[in-house]
Length: 309
Image (cartoon, rainbow, N blue to C red; front, top):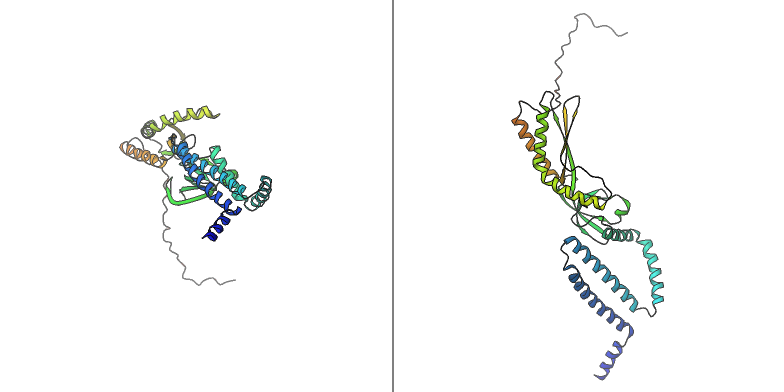
């Protein structure tokens, strides 16, 4: 028994074992401290996106400090640790350039307000809603591609954060969560074009009036933040006479999530209104009818065929 106790004491007095025990204890304390700090810091924050970013930041800083403490436990001198870390960093920087660029992109995204979880963006040719921002990659729920309109197609795409330094970042819902949309309506010559414009304006206003009010208030906030001129957010209907018909162009502001649904509702209203006033107004169209080639009868003379020269 005495011999066994002496072996345990000798094992506990081993410097390496003591350092490993210190690292384990530091890890447990760090995890508890990080979880507690995340709860304390985010308790008073109501916005979900801000809570998400702060929790990520607290976790990253806490674990980074833990790594430094763990490495310092195995170094007798801080200067030696600096040299080791410097040499290791040079090798890592050379072999993991893309990873480092993605990490730098995460820092830029976190503090540069490129986008937040929930925003609709286009990154590296991929368009979708941001559902997670990791240290290395941003995760998108993709929209479009083989699915028409702004609808999910079911694919989850992960894009490297380094794309924010290489390509433009298109944010559909950042500081201004509305989009301008437009479509063209051809009206046949001879129609009552004044009545047609009245019908179009009434149909558009009925479906986008609420968006116009919210967009106007949102644009005022944007104008105070950036150097941007005043913009018209009320529906606008313009007319152009072409060779084939009278063409109305309709421009309006709509919530980025309701663009397809809103256009569908406007078109249905226009179809009903034009049908009710079909004696006065009608849609213009170009119709082409392809007629089959009529049968051709070839007649030959009864005389001998001409001989070849």
